[in-house]
Length: 309
Image (tube, rainbow, N blue to C red; front, side):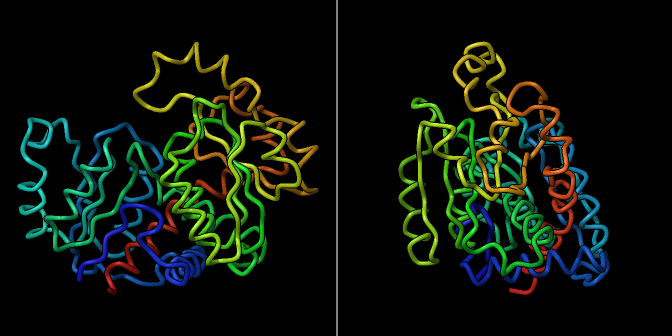
């Protein structure tokens, strides 16, 4: 049966660990494995703008011995309304995997339902699971290994209803972390995802907390994460959101109430002076650039793992 990676909990805790261990190994040896030697093609489809996803998947597929077939949907038949199922049937006959950065989660689920080749969620409005693999791998690297993740407290503050919050809940729970989300009352995570995360956390020895207070989320945290207050497609809401999210900025106060030596994550792009201050993202407790680098290693690990199923 073909394995897909459409949301963080499409792998088990043990499988997530395998992928993270492999990501750390790829950082030490970028040509450790070459599952797409041939070269075999991997389709990488973009419905949304991208820097890190485009560069990391394109470079990663090439380093895995494959050919990165980058497709901008606007210049493909997908952009002209071809059914997703039809595109999936065509691609599965020509490529070894399909990576898609798109909008609705239902789109990538439909692609997977009609593909005999692995489909990877490179970002949807609901989840960003490849980013969370990179984040967890970066934390593991900075703290001495994957064993260090279980029991850590990860606080995410900002827009709790976005894809990053949802993926932190699921991915952090799988890793056995204590995940806290601090967000305004009108921007809390999807309750169905919270319930899924709580079930996983109970199995893995972690916990899930959702609060409307920045300080309740961040106090005593080992990792502080945030994201832009305005996701792609919501730019016209910026003025209203900036007022609502003002109290959720990651700044020196955040570091002061977190655990000593707490590390800071941001998936980028970052807007200094808004969701995070320059002194924090550019400061000694930031591992944002290591996190960005791990997009490459974690996605290579994921594709290698999927190719071996």
